[in-house]
Structures are given as C-alpha cells and as structure tokens.
Length: 242
Image 1 (cartoon, rainbow, N blue to C red):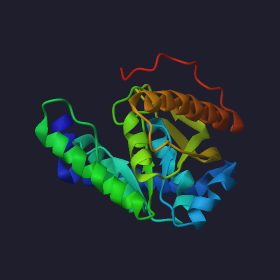
Image 2 (cartoon, rainbow, N blue to C red; image 1 turned 180 degrees about the vertical axis):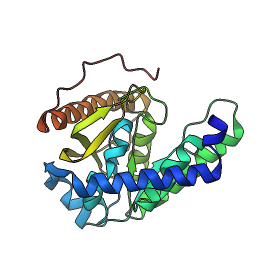
Image 3 (spheres, rainbow, N blue to C red; image 1 turned 90 degrees about the vertical axis):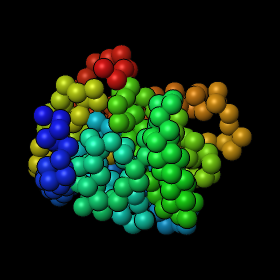
Image 4 (cartoon, one colour; image 1 turned 180 degrees about the horizontal axis):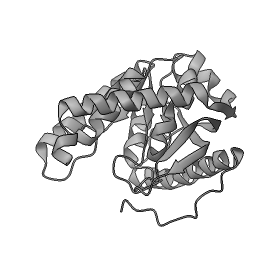
C-alpha cells in the first residue's frame, strides 16, 4: 500500500486534494486572530522570520496565510516520500517548500541533503523571507520542538513567532500528532506569540532549554485556541512519536 501511495501520480492527486481542502477551510471557516499585531513589524519590515505551529495542525495552516502571504514565505518540509504530497499541496496554496530533515548517523546521502536544505533555509530567511516550520515533524515526538528550527533562528539571527491553531467543529485522528481536520463553515482561532529570539552565542544546553520552554508555550497557545472555539482540549499524553 505504501508503494502505491508513493507513486508520483498518486502523490500529485493527494497534493491536489489536500490543497483543495486547505483552501476550503481558509475560505469557509470564520477565523479569529488573537495578538496578531505582534507579527506586524516583521511583516512590514525587511527582516526574515520563522513561524512555528504543530504538525497536527497542517490541515488548518492556511488560517495564517493572509498574514504570511504579505511576505515571501516558504514551508520547511521533509524530503521523504510521505512529505511529497504535503509539499505539493502547500506549493499550490502559495507556500513553496524547502525540503530538509535530520539525518541518521552514517547516512551520508541524507546528511548531504540535510546540509543542503539547511543552507537553503538560511539563505532564504537571511534575504528577508519567512519560513513556516512544524517543529515536531515529520515523526515526532508530538508537540516537542526539535533543535533544528532554533539553529536556523540562531544562525540567521531572525525572530520566531508561535501560532496556536484550532477549529470547531473538527475531528482529531488517532495519529501520532493528533491531526485536526476542520469541518467547513465552522469557527477557527489562531493565537500568536512573539517575537522570540535565540541568542547568537547560545550553546546546545541553552538551545535545549529554549526548545522545552517554547514547546510549552506553543502547546499553551494551542490549548488557548481550542478553548476560544469551544473545544475541550484532549488530556495531556506522554510526548512520544508512537
């Protein structure tokens, strides 16, 4: 089955279906933005930026498009076959992909791809572009920010914005990331926080502390967004990729 789903023709169809759904959710859900003024300086200025939301909210991600469309914006997507249709969908929706993921030790091909993706991301934000990242993807742990996003922010010296997104009515699937699928013509909320920065001199220990702090912050504003639309947040579960 996986082989079938990874065929180019099937991936193209899946990308079209997801892009169509993303646009439907943007146009029919009544979106409310909370603290969105915090991002206005970077949207109006020349600085690059990073924008983070949880992987499980990809189906709701065009809720932030009216803001980020104002600035040249791309999305950081895994180069895996499973990420291909997501990259195609986001490209159709106005967010071309930069393909980058971490590499396992000893995998030289993936290591080279990771380095190339990191350099492309650095160049993009360094030239004033914005980069949207799901920092717990593509495999988790759920709602745990990986260090890669902060490494980009530190090296490029750009601000980071967090976006907690939720909608109702919606269903949450029993996937590792508890992906949320919104019904058309419902209510949605985006809670913004930022700008956050990573000190240029930050070492691994400080970045690890920031990852934990920002993970808690992003989860907190995601729960706030859920309450804003009348959803009862799911009970906290162990943060794992299983």
